[in-house]
Length: 238
Image (cartoon, rainbow, N blue to C red):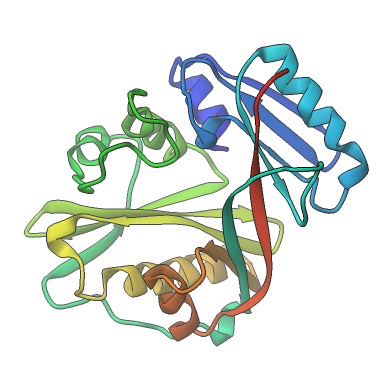
């Protein structure tokens, strides 16, 4: 959904889907967010489909796998995959003074104003442009992705999203401004998205997070449990 939103926002990106496998490549948006391949963890025999895809585009790709996909492959990022029944998620209340609401396509300035304190935008390489404000606007217009923002005194201090597919709601990354961290906003985002997933007819919710970090701990406190791991491996075109 994010790849298609980037294309709708006017960025150059090539998307290829074949059964369970989906891949994206973009010279304009350098970094793993828009240059990665999914679906190969369960189909390791098709790894060459991804490597040929990035050879053809001449871009570095990040391939998700369950184990090393080729000799000497260097792991880049490992995430725990979490899941739970929607009924099992703790219904955390919003912290005092914080309002969490559903965003829409008119919230362009809100997406652009969020300051994370990070040197580079999420999933982008140093020096790359920040596509996320424009991408989030397009995502907020889609039927499958729900965007939420957290506000303090009318100022946006965080955002998060929920992707609905069938009866499963997948919680995408939650971002909170540096000055608003430590209040429980991320846990409130988890609860808000679980409620939204239930309302959308989902009986399962899932998410991913780096093991041992705050996001993973918040997911566990909310009632999710780790079901396995997935790792990205960087592939440079030959």
